[in-house]
Amino acid sequence: MKFSSLVPSVIAAAGIAVTASMMPAEAAMFGFNNIQGGDTFGDSIVNQFSFDVTDAGSGQVSFKFNNAGPASSTITQIYWDDMDGILSSLSLDSSKTSASGVNFTIPNNVGNLPQGNNLTPSFDENFEVARSNGQGGAANGIDSGEMLGVLFNGSFDSIIAGLNDGSLRVGMHVQRIGTASQSDAYVNAPGNPTQDVPEPLTILGSATALGIGGLLKRQQSKKNNKA
Image (spheres, one colour):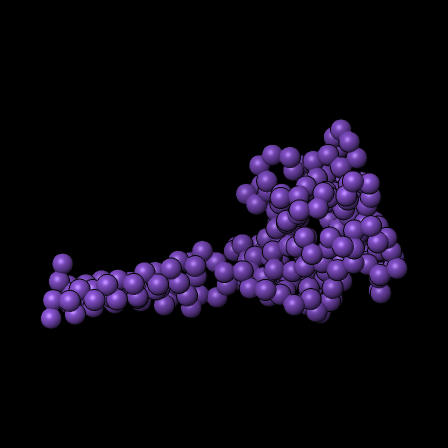
């Protein structure tokens, strides 16, 4: 294949790569903080918990909760304190939930975040998802290496702003921590820095650009060898 015949294809692919890489990554990752003045059993493993917030389109926003491990632990309840009323229509998202071992429900009556009164202001629960009843105190929860997805109706930008300024808070109760099977609670901190989560097209754009660079380099090398 002649080098000149590759130019149109390379330009087209480069255009796709640039367009994809310029698309905004409408997603952010948040971590959790320990609740001061509360239990300390799980303080050392707080960094293994996180959640991604993604613009799901059609006026919906996705929350995906991750228990990365490796410490033994199970997330059993998750709560939202929505001070400005920016969330509505909570539902479970099976597409972002571990296929087996994780089974959550939406209780008819919202419970209380353990240690929530130690926060300033106190945690006021508006929404909750909880592991469905099963054998054992934490059966069907989010164990190490598992995840859970939920959906809300709402504005992605407003939700990210709320998580950053503290008007929207997410808390969770974790059980079966360590060999002693203790429990603890966590909350995302106001102003907690977010990390952009690349969308598939962004990753594709970068990979395409790298592939084009390698192809041009090989073609130039062949051309130089023939000279």
